[in-house]
Length: 126
Image 1 (cartoon, rainbow, N blue to C red):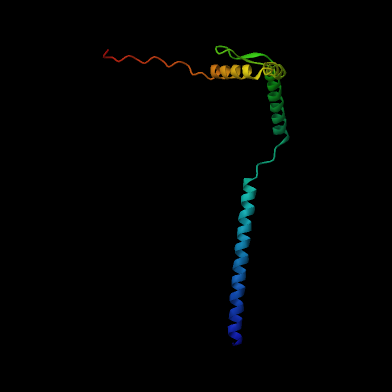
Image 2: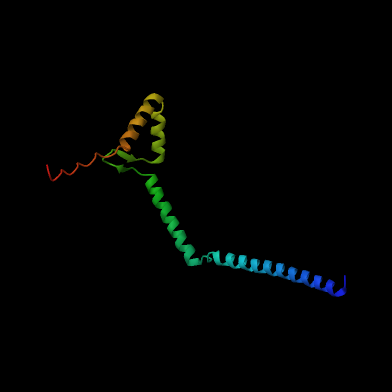
C-alpha cells in the first residue's frame, strides 16, 4: 500500500466519523428542542393562588355534600346520607346477611329500573 492510498483511507474514516458525530449532534439537538418545546410554562404566583383557592372551594363543597342529608332521586326514594350514618346503617342491616342481601338486591333493582317505554305514535292510517 502506498502512502497516498493510506491517506485516502484515513480521510474516508475521518469523513465517516465526522458524519456519524454530526448526525448524533443533530439528533441530540432535536431531542433537546422537543424537550424544551413540550415543557409546560412555570406556574406564576397568581396562578398558584387561583388553583389553591379553587381546591379549597372544591374540598369545602365536597365536605358539605359528604356530611349532609339530601335527596339524590326523590322519585325513586334515594337519599344521600353522611358517611358515618351510612356505615352505622349498613352495620345494623348486615346483622342478618340473607335479609340484607335481598334488601340490597331490591334497592338496586329499584334504583336502576328503566322508565316505562313512551307510547308509540299511532299510525295515521288507523
